[in-house]
Image (cartoon, rainbow, N blue to C red; front, top):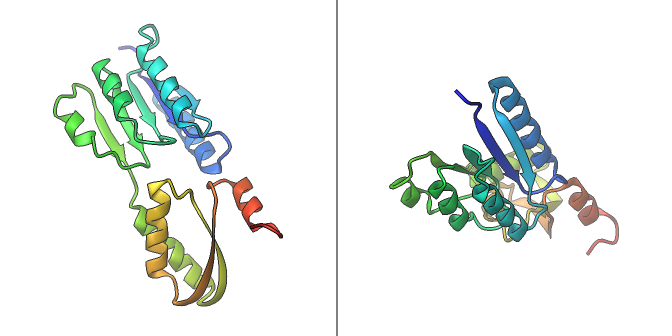
Length: 187
């Protein structure tokens, strides 16, 4: 039996969460004897889509599966191309409403793994409540174009202590973004 060949497509190398996902994927692949390739979209949805289309079209090194955390949309057209080429498709941390349609005709695995983002926001609010039940709090929110950020904020706002007043700033979920947003003189 040949070695399973998997591609993991992540958004960027400049994010601690993405780096941890890559490290966990490498550890699991090593433990399970899986050939693993990690590619990064550099926070550019077009670049990420092009990378994956190139991988799908390369018949010489075609993977058995692609696990992708999309930069932009959930890439339904790339998913269709992957499935047509016999490549399994997994969406990470993103809703993908096309999955059930693709499953009807797929001959390879296709699914999504997406945490309950509202619950993540509620957990964050409970953590805040353990530290402060009143006062002003700086809340650095993820990108508003990202559904996860919107759902987390919804859960957070519904659960935070009423006497806590938020000053909300947008960020991109990187340490650098947090430093930029919370530095003196930031607007």
